Length: 345
Ligand code: DAH
Image 1 (cartoon, helix red, strand yellow):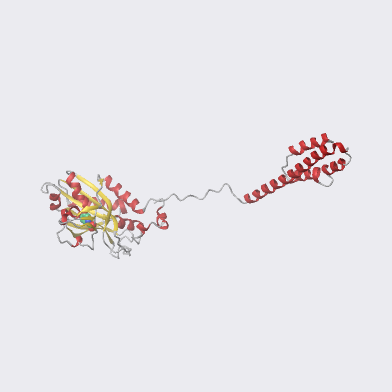
Image 2 (spheres, rainbow, N blue to C red; image 1 turned 60 degrees about the vertical axis):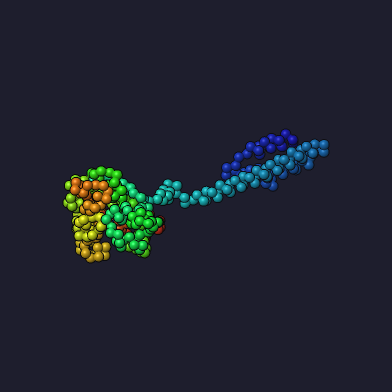
């Protein structure tokens, strides 16, 4: 009988169950009322006393093993049935939800486009400081000593000095780079300067204490007002569409003479009148003019030999026009609901 039990121990140990049917077969064969275990326990009664201990131990081992196997197999089958349920209705061929990869900021998009247009016209890209002296921001640009733009309302001063031209401030426009550039480079100069500027303005949908400008400067022999006009006309067509027209309105800036404000024909209503152009058919995009001889002289350039034109534009303004953005503050709030709209722009 001991041999028989040991054979069965090996058989139970090796048994593999893959289905409910297999499991039931196993149960019937070993554990059910009419199964082998009960048969063996009946037979055990006939075992001579001196063998009872050894046979009994093996028989108990077989019983425990068979019951353990039954529990393990039952649990394993239940688990795989559960996960099959969970997989029901799962379509593994569906594309995964895309991860949001981020977007280029709308001001950066405009900046890149503007730089690209001017680069193709031969303008290189220069940089200048945001913390500036009064000299480069105002005095060298021919601002009169008591010009209202210097007042505390407009300018963030960093440090007041004994002499006005030495005051340190946050630049109020990118025109500060003009003189810096002309001091170090001899004509021909054909450059654009782009960056952040600061003004002490109440923040609203149309104004902010920080914004961006692009400045253009072209100085050489025989640079004329026509060159200015052609350059800005070409820019306007590239930026806003080939059917864009420009209009120059006489204006005043201390550092240019003559000076002009540049309007473009409203590309939204095509001149018929809308909110963007305030029903005039025209929108202002830039200030410009011929570089004042005083500014050339302040930079060490002979104003008898050279002439130049300059212009300045607000990047936010161009971006608002380009994408129909109605509130300037959106550019600085970094609300992803706004920024995500420029995905792929
Ligand atoms: N600096 C002027 C401003 O911030 C813009 C400007 C006007 C720049 C005329 C120029 C210019 O270079 O020629 O409003």
